[in-house]
Length: 89
Length: 444
Image 1 (cartoon, helix red, strand yellow):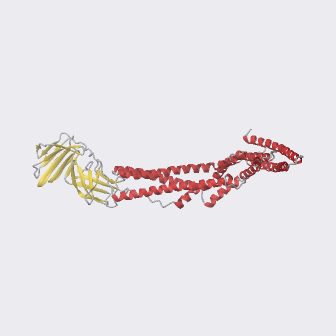
Image 2: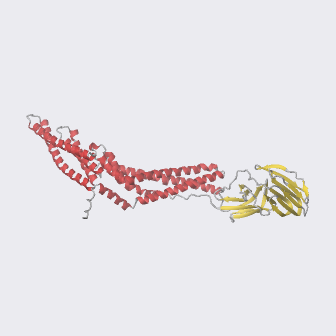
């Protein structure tokens, strides 16, 4: 396994964790927001968690797509041309 | 290309980490702030990595616009090296010349110039090495810089930014060194060196036989001894030729020291007009270790060959004096006047470490034949430290020239390039700060 593959694997794992964390945060955020606690600061923390989770999910979706595209282009741009067709003998 | 892929992969990881931190269910602001920060870093890295080709192309274009090329830079460096090495050689030669001229007091000045030149050479070597590394490793600088730049949590951001800046800015700025140096350098004066003209003086006896190892004494018009120079075994005395600092024009009266005596010569002076002159000692007959010195007596040489000297007295003037002088180790010397053997009283003396025997011949009359038979031998050169000619104005001119040259060389070849390297370093640092230092275009 090359270092590039290692980094890519790690990226995929981090992204998976990030999606999972987004869900957890979103749920926790709504839970806090909807909890029957009459403290405005606690409610605001829940609101902020939901906002962060949504933002993270949005940027994760956009970013991973764009980055995957760039990564694909970069890894293919240096690839040599395929060998010319050989005439039949 | 592998490195670029790695940089992109690292940027993706940084972005994912940023998104992860942003999405963490921990409402702690200092931690959360790292989310957008890492994502912005990843985007910046991605932009830099994607535009590396354009950046490299742009830097080449800028070089083209400025009108500098690496080829011209190396040509310029080669010329500087060649000039400095030549000057180094010349200065070593001058040092030797001063030593042989007895002007040791001036050697420190030359040594100072030599130090300046060697310092300049070392500086140029260093610049050459840096330039070579820049030119050869530019691509690696930029790509490796991108990799460092894209490591998450800004671990290698400063290093990466610096490396990218070196690959882009220093690569353009370095070949412009000749332009900078030429624009700010003073006119380096030419090194004034003593004339390399050579004058040969052939010293001969009255018959035309070369006088071996003659000691030529040269006096100025004021009567001061300007030089004491020993000739070679063929009677040739070389003036100049790198050993003397002769004035542009000169007229030295000369005498020749030989066999313990100083003889007047014909002509009695030498000038710069003739490069190859002959001076004759009229009252000397010399052959293979034995000389006959005459005063007040005119003699005709009848025979002159190794071991046999025959002289006939043609005329005797007032207070005649004839001396037979031989090198002490010439053996079996017999002197005859007419047909009878002359009982010589050989008187031993030493002249410049040469042992000499002298016999005075008296009672010569017109028509007498003076015969000397001996076993011929060589004449050893006088043991004397030569005093080479050093013309005062030449020395002054040379010292002035050397000090001016040393200062100019230090300024032009060391100070200016060092200043320029400082400028390049500042430009590179500034570019690095724009990319990742305190003067950021990108958000924290």
